Each structure stands twice: as C-alpha cells, then as structure tokens.
Image (cartoon, rainbow, N blue to C red):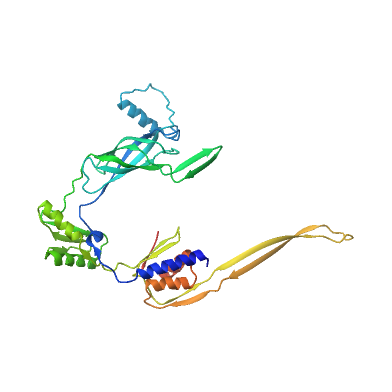
Length: 369
C-alpha cells in the first residue's frame, strides 16, 4: 500500500471517528425552510462583443449572424440583401442567474455567461443587454456588462496552451431585477415549515421545540411539513419567524448511506452505517512478463548462422492476503479501520463495499455516482 493511500485512509478514519459521536443540536434555519420562500432561475440568450478574434465561426454558427442582423435591424440599420457577414469578435452566449427570495426591482444579481457556439474564448468581451426570463416567459431581469474570465490561453505555430476555462465567465452584479416575484409567507393564519430532508421523528422534534417556546402553535402534517400558527401582521410575523429559525433542534439520525464516486474513487459514509458479521479478504495479484533478447553465435567451423533468441520470463506475485472477521453491529469508525487493516486503497474500498452489500452484510444504502 503506497504512502498516499495510507495517509488518506488514516485521515479519513480520524475524521469519521470524530464525527461518530452523538448528534448535536442544529438551528431550525439549517434544518427547514418556509414553504413558498424559494429562489427562481432565470435565463436569456445574448451576444458578447469586443472579442480579440476569438468569437464564433459564423459559417458554422448561423444563429450568431442572424442575431447580429436582427439586432442591427432593431437599431435602424438595414443590411443589403445577400451580405455574408464574417464576424470574429462576436459570440452567441446563454446567460443564467438566480433570483433570490424577495428580490426587488433595482437589486443587482451576479450572472454566468456561457458560450453557445464555437468561440475559442470570451476573454475581454462585453455582454450586450440581455433579457432574463423565468419559466413563465416573463422578463425578470436585464443583464449587461464586462465579463470576468479567470482562465488564460495562447497559441502559436500550431501549439496552444490553456489554463482554466475560457468559454464561460461571470459578471458580478451584471443583472438588474426588473420584476418582483410574488412570495407570500404563508396563509392568513399560519405558515408551513418544510424539512430539507423528510423524517417523521425530526418533524415531531421540531414541532415540540416550537411549542416549548411559543405554546401549542405547531403541529406536524407529515414527514416533511410542520404547520405553525403565526401572527397576521407582517412585522409581527417576520419577528416570530426569525425567533423560530434561531431555535435549536436535535435531528434524528438519518438513513445509513454510503456514497461511492466510481470516477474519483471517493467513498463517503455517514455514522449510521452498520455491518452484519462477515469476513473480508484482500490481496493483489501482479503478473509480470519480461522479454530479453540474446545473440546465439555458432562456432567458427560449424555450419550455422547467427540468430537472435528471445528469452521470455513470466512472474506471478501475489501480496499476502489478510482475512479479517468483522463483528456484527460494527459502527462506521470500525468499518474504516477494518478496511484499512487489509490495506485497501479507495478503489479497493469501492469493490469491498459493493461485495458487502451484495452479501447482505452492509446495512446501508449504497449509492454509486
């Protein structure tokens, strides 16, 4: 086992052992949100101009030329029929942003600008005024400004070098809200608190915490929703909800889950993971094939020819395989310690966990992403 994997597993074991204790109280603000209070995505199609010859190749992206013609037509400039525009400093882009809850006209938003065609770089470009629409088709913001690109690139003589990404960038404060999204906080007499993760026990605990502080005003509806009677006056309701969000609640331990990233070899497990009794063996089989060439020289008086002889050698090595017994009810820290004991690297851990799940020994949801 190489030192990097050993250090990784030891660090992971220490972190998991630290987090394997009892659950601590969390603020209601971190566990739940108020129904109806949400963000809204907006999107728009626009043009970035002022590029240094790194824009779209208009022969392959005809929509860029069409957009330029339409824009010039709206500004009173009519192009002669049959004109073939060859533009290198313009790129068609998609502009995305998120309207936060209670966004008001005049508020500034950060926007992300991404190339839609085959532009080589958006560095140094300026986004022209772009309407940003919501899912209902209405315009909620207008975006415009100079792009900030964190990457860099250069090319010469067929050789190119690029650092980071050049086809997308951001404009801090690049959009201005033009329309507010109606967002009433609850009905006339109550609001609904929604847990970020549905859990019956946590919903009951949250309602009990609210009732201890404000009297019998909260009652759970299901595993996610809790109905809370709130003052009708807006200022009183805001103060009431602010106090509720600051209350502490100890959430119920969630489902046992193991998340495996097969592309990076990452394995993340929560503290609820348990094992039934099982045995784990780990061993690496290495096959090495080598070929050496030697010259066979006959005697001077012999009637023979010089020949090249291939000497092939095949070696098979197997590391010592350790068979360990995992006791039933083993907690997370012991699971990682056991995998570390057999010298498993992250990719080996993935295979071992999948085998444990198939054998019925891993009492957890195994999710591969």
